[in-house]
Image (cartoon, rainbow, N blue to C red; front, side, top):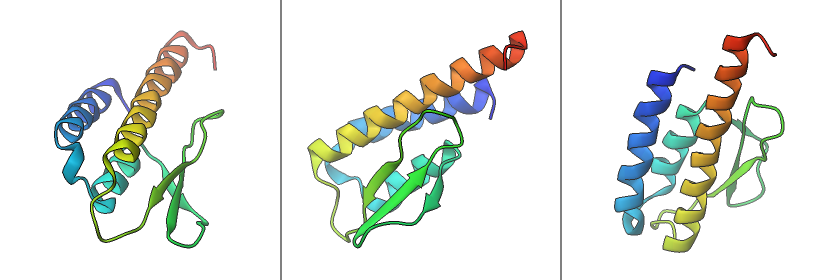
Amino acid sequence: MDKNKLQKISGELEKARRQVSNLKTADMVRLATSLERTLAAGKSGHLVYKSPLPGRTSLVITNHPKPIKRGLALTQINFLEGDIEAWEEWLDQAERGDL
């Protein structure tokens, strides 16, 4: 992960926010995996993606053929924006040698 990639992903999240009423599971999975989240064991009907960053909570994505409900999609986008902030902080610490 690097700052250029984070900037690109941030733009993709903004685009997703503008199209929030039409986001599908595959769109949210693509965004989660672009932030290096990996699929973990999920509950029925749900996909659980874990972050490699310490302290970040798992992201649960519904696995349905219909678009994700607007409120849930916005919550998930906000959550992934938090991942960007966490990655930026981690990269800054790595540059300073604080890890």
